[in-house]
Length: 408
Image 1 (cartoon, rainbow, N blue to C red):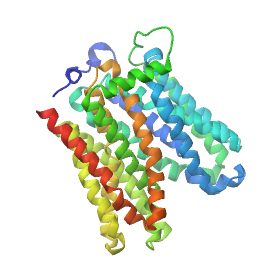
Image 2: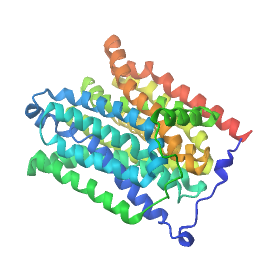
Image 3: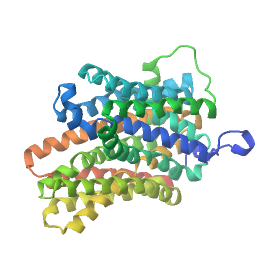
Image 4: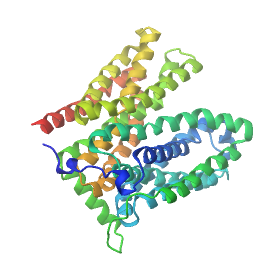
């Protein structure tokens, strides 16, 4: 079954005076990089700065949890904010959150860090729905998976910036100066958005009801079978994605890899993730988003089963398995977002993606925690990945059924 929303075509920028796809893609991808960089800013320098906060380095894990918890609530009300303020102003709000949070972190106060983490979460939760509305307004349906996946490649790129550039600058200029410098492009992009403009603010009631907006978004998501599946895929796949990011290095070290070698492999997994986002996006446009999402689930499940015997695998094979898992489990995001826009009216894109991302954030919160709990019983990360491989299999089953239904 093909949604009527999928027949809408994007306006021709040359005829409407709207920004070009390339211009909007560059802007939204830059914002995606800045959002991820900000969210992970402390992770790469935690051993360096933890003492100044009066905390142990592992507390950075709790900071990430706070960010995603705040992001869950922010994502739930993102559609309402977009409806009342327009996607450009909501995107500007997100950038203001990122810049302000980086400045708050320079206080080295645990309580300010808690506040800053919640502020980052608010920005992180609203920026994806807002950018989807902006990008969807200029992207033709037949190119959505690729374009949205290119934008989502900003996530691993932002992760690389946080892991490599921030520690390097912190060692050279000091971490406080580095964070101040990091806030500059966040505030600068607010001005860029003001100059470029974007979709007009939709007509909306004067009053704002966050609860009513949340309920309406959830009705949009759960009112159509394809959107229900996409929400569940976001929760299932994000739980595996974050588990891989959280435990790849630790798993390799546990199996007698050096910290340096494990770190290099983890960097390779991130790089493959960026490549995967673009590659799967192109395949999604050609073969259908649900078909690609089913393949991602099947291949990921096979990789997770292979990790059960990682100690018996040659080093090159183990690296290949991890990189292939990263290629798949970091590659689904843009395809899911593009499919969301195919199954809703253009003016509802931000609200539908905001409503769906609630479940993605839930997956992010429960995935690594569940893996840690399973590890507590098994004492082996390879076995833990084996025991949760069914999650990828369930995602493949749901996506496969949706693919068959869409062609029926």
